[in-house]
Image (cartoon, rainbow, N blue to C red):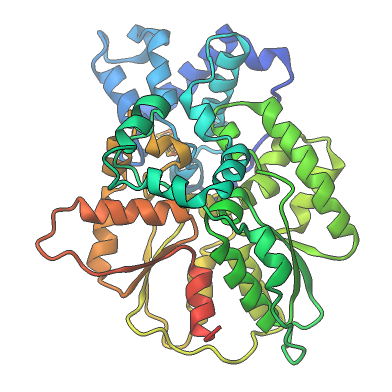
Length: 447
Ligand code: SF4
Ligand code: SF4
């Protein structure tokens, strides 16, 4: 069930190869239809920067209605959408199957693809920083230099990076590692606990670009927890899921990636392995977005059925077979941010369920968007807005006053830390940031 409607939300396939999908007139008619319903509803006024932009546009128009808004002015509304999916999943009572058929984020995607197709969009700097595989491979050769150059404290390189790549000089950027997750997985193989109730399960971990290049510890912790619970794992990384390209409405590129990754993971599924995606945005792609972009592709459909989000998989084990013994309380409690793309998987708050499996769990859940929005939030023109959108979440994270802060979305965790710094508190609470709740779960196991 959608959190905003009484029916289970449905998403229709994105018919991006149909010429009608990019018919500019038809698209603008659809934008006007949807914007008019939003104008009458306004429930999403404080979710992000897109809706305030839309409502200001209407309120400041001659008639105060959409009929006097120039259609060319729709673009900033589209550009401000980070595709967090919160309006679709959390607020909107009019998502399909409701006859109003409102899927705001997918409409923004359609607009972006149409711009691309009609030559109204040229790939800019954002496209360069979202080439995660190319950048990850390059930085893995010189991780010390890459991390030195990308530190926010580096007053020499960050202004230069801002100028050349358009990345705001104060935006925290992920670190790079010479030893990627796939490399470490070859030598760091945890022993499988044959006494665990779930012994016999086999899972292939889809490393994801973030865990592979930027934070291998997430994958290492996941493997340890799974092995302790009797699950034999392999780590594979055929390539990025294409979420950064989806954000830019580049359906052809996302399709290419979906075909490639699903073929590689399909060979593991055929051998009886479950598939676990480490990062929620990537799980969302494998489970839901790819099948809507390539609805006739059997490999993509098979992968969608076999994929679990990491927290979802742990909770599934706890419910079906039961967890292995050994969890100990985590002193000080955890402020847990629910990642938007975990919520968009419509599976319930699995990270919170997982953390509550720890004895005497003290979990404060933060359900607001962090405002980061992937590559969107680090760009010079968006960083301040990203902090503004995430301010309520940062405020709550500080107020929770727990020892740990964790989000399944590692970028959101960093962004919240920066948001807390900017609150101007007289006494900034000391909070230890975990890259993913699984790291705290591994710690509770003493692994
Ligand atoms: S998907 Fe997120 S950013 Fe986009 S319009 Fe909806 S709430 Fe706003
Ligand atoms: S997306 Fe739905 S809930 Fe949000 S303003 Fe539009 S109609 Fe209302």
